[in-house]
Length: 510
Image (cartoon, rainbow, N blue to C red; front, side, top):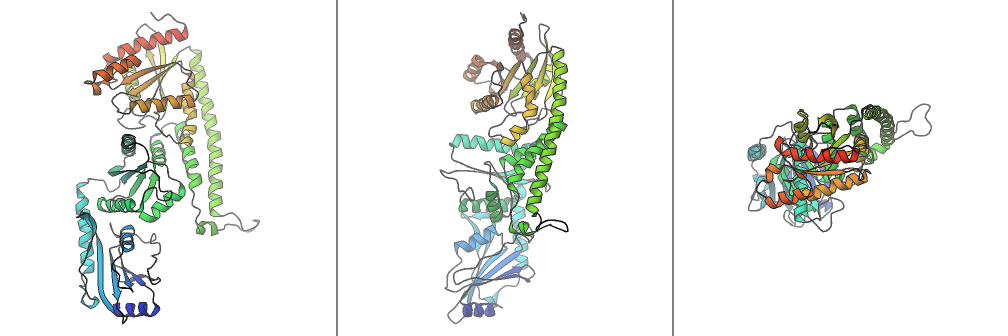
């Protein structure tokens, strides 16, 4: 076969490639030009393990070695092996040169070259060799104890921000992934002055990530930056891995965590708004016309139908949400008639708002060390030391770069804050970037037109910064320092909050 392939390639003066299955069956024949071949999409072929289950053998007419383009094909397509047949001046095979991927890097290389061999002298144990290689991939990644049903992700950030901010943003992305029960196998932070408009990062860096994904058994790439539809498509085509961005991850967390009818409606709306501009516009979708008897013209394309269905669903959800909002308004009206003042907890996600509410009211609201553990607003009664009763409300945590559609969708939930007489801004003092987090919350409150409501700052998790007297002193000058886990530390907060509420309501709280 090698002799015939080389003879035909020499006669046509074009490179010819064969994609071979592990059984030896020919999957595809590729005819290129003198310099190279173009491998078609292999997305329809299911991988046989870590590797694709296909071997590429193609001719080289100018005596050139395995090229960088060949190595990129080996990597991005996860081929079992790539082999080059050098064709001599007589149109006969000179030797076969092969390369395969490695389960771990050796001397900085992620692939290994086999000794060149004449095609007639090939060892017939190729299938055994690949099975052994697959087993080595699995064994090398065996240290990662990951449930096979879990998403296994590599997290990627490409940013022009400072190193400190980039690393903090990545830490937050790691916490978001863990909150969504994603196993984080590795993180990659690349700082670039200019982001690649097509692939976000450079092709060489993407190749390194592909190697790590292959070695670790990752099935998902999560980007810290929001990706547009063409970027997701380009990266997916290059890597054949699922690709999502930070926004999609947050939406997924909210979809899992929302408990109330209102919360579920808001999340579905946000997901549909996110999905709408990202609907596939592939040629095959546009060509599938569904017109029929009685329809004018060729009918609607599948893409148009999908968009219309989403818009119809959004309109229906909007009506339902307005109805639910009216019911919530009536509940608030009944509460106002009882003349109970309202104190609302706000703050960055995972600042400890739910834990604080639990400790103050002896409740057992879900309070996990996860981002967005609380999505639905929760209210409890709280009695201050000097016999003043208030309603204390816990709300969804804020986060930087909160998706615009999600913020819009949650405005109904955050309407609770409009009824607040006092906002309590809970800050995680143990977070190195707590100043940035405070600014995010302050900016969002202004965006929601809530900046006019009196606000008391409460610096939480003081137990985690016990040794830093300077930090504790600085926080104490700005607000109240507490540990939500230690009830005794909350007494100064209760006194201060009651005094502020008394002034707001014109009640003597002394």
